[in-house]
Length: 177
Ligand SMILES: NC(=O)c1ccc[n+]([C@@H]2O[C@H](COP(=O)([O-])OP(=O)(O)OC[C@H]3O[C@@H](n4cnc5c(N)ncnc54)[C@H](OP(=O)(O)O)[C@@H]3O)[C@@H](O)[C@H]2O)c1
Image (cartoon, rainbow, N blue to C red; front, side, top):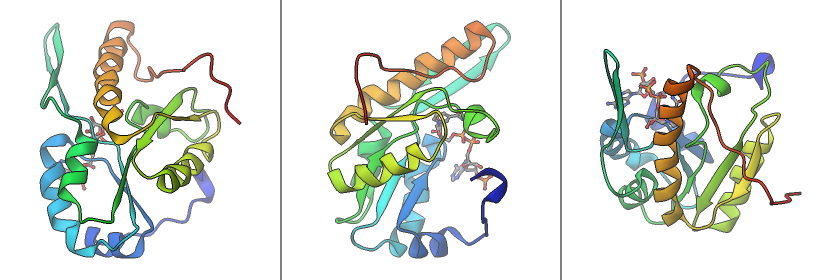
C-alpha cells in the first residue's frame, strides 16, 4: 500500500490474464466496450470488482446536475457482458477517488460489497480491510447494486452542496468483526 506499493504496467488484456481480481472503474459510457475488449483474457473463477456507476455529472455555471444514464446497475450490466464463471462483485461505488488517492489519510467510510458469490465477496472484503479506516459491509446479492450505485448520485450532490470531494457513507447499528 501507499509508498510500498509494487506497481507495473501491462496492456489491459495481459493484466486481466495475470490477475485473480480485476477492478473495473471506467465511465459508464466506456464500460461495455472495455469489457468487450478484455473478455478474451478472462478465465473461470476470476473476480471482477465493478466500481463504475451509471452516472454523469454535467457542470454548467451554477447548474450542476448528476444524470442517471441507465435505470439498471452497472454491476448487473457488467455481469451480462462477462463470460460465465467470472464472478462480479460491486464495491467501492460510494467512496471518493479523492479519499482513495491519499494513502496518508484514513478512509472514513463504509464500503458496501454485493455479489452473488460469497467466496468472491470475502476476497473483496479483504481488499476493503486493507484500507485503514474503511469497513466492509456485506450488502447482499448483486441486484442490490442498483440501490448502491444510486447513492453515488446523492454523494456527488452533497460534495457540491458542501464544497468537498470526500462525502461517503457509514452504516450504523451493525457490528462487524
Ligand atoms: N471519481 C470518484 O470519486 C468515483 C467514486 C465512485 C464511483 N466512481 C465511478 O467510477 C467510474 C470511474 O470514475 P473516475 O472518476 O475514475 O473516471 P475517469 O477519471 O473519468 O476515468 C477513469 C479511467 O477510465 C478510463 N476511461 C475514460 N473514458 C474511457 C472510455 N470511454 N473507455 C475506456 N476507458 C475509459 C481512463 O483511462 P485512461 O486515462 O487510460 O484513458 C481513466 O483513467 C465512474 O463510473 C464513476 O462514476 C467514481
